[in-house]
Image: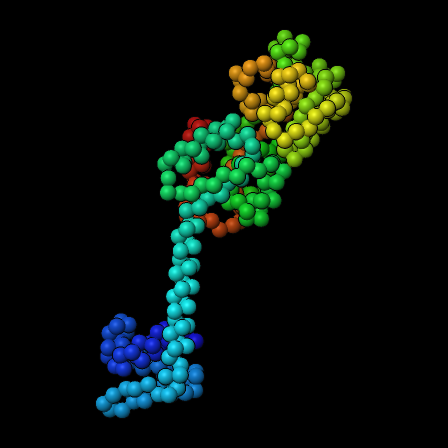
Amino acid sequence: MKIQKLVTFVNLATTLNFSQTAEQLYITQSSVSKHLKALEKELQVSLFERTSRKVTLSEYGKLMLPYAQKILNDYQGMTTALTNYTNATINNISLAAIPTLTSYQAFTAITEYMQTFPEVKLKLEETETSLIPKRLLGGQNDFAFTRVFDQIDPVFDSIVTETDHFAVFVSEHNPLSELHQISLEDLRDEKFVLLAEKTNLFTPIIRHCQNHGFSPNVIYRGERVSSIIDMVQSNIGITILMSKSVPVDKPGIVALPLIDALDSHLVFLKRAHDKYTPQQLSFWNYLQKYFDSKQE
């Protein structure tokens, strides 16, 4: 049953005049008749009694009228709710980001976007690197900013923002702080304080050390760069972190370039074969142009 048939019925039940109903609904009188006949045929009852002088509701019509009015009210409520929800969410953008987001150019790009388009509700969610692909594919987030060491899974579209590499961070009281650069072999007797597995940095570091002939002595695994740095400042151990994730002027800390350091790419990701709202695509295009201009 088409809603328009019920609209015509309810209106005609009020006007009891075919020409007035046609005028009010912006349709022809023949269309009013067609809607009514189709509805009566579908219900197998006569809804109006017609004479040459007037139109009146039949007993069936009187019985049906409150139900038809309720259906139309519910339909209007449904469409209003859907419209309100669409208007509330159409400018929403959800971005999962690694905890070190603020250390990279991506943070500047996001900040400038939010200042340029204040009407867009951009929600940032700090998420461990290991969880980002699942959240993005599962639809919990529209986009993601993360770090990759290997090739990017083809289920994602990507924008590469910059590269970063491993560096060694030691206390200024550690004898290694006198060096200008360092190799992994120089660290075989050191105590390591490292970010834990779910940051996706632990395994590459362990593997890189093993490829250079030793397994590091890891005395602490944490989830926050700040905690790791506090331990290094106290000379509890040394750490390997991405170079840009630690401020260059951090007191009590010396950053040493690592010979044969592993590089990583910082990237924005979106689902490759999914539909996005115009506003979401505008955000993606903004990022694309922003980082294209940085490479010129």
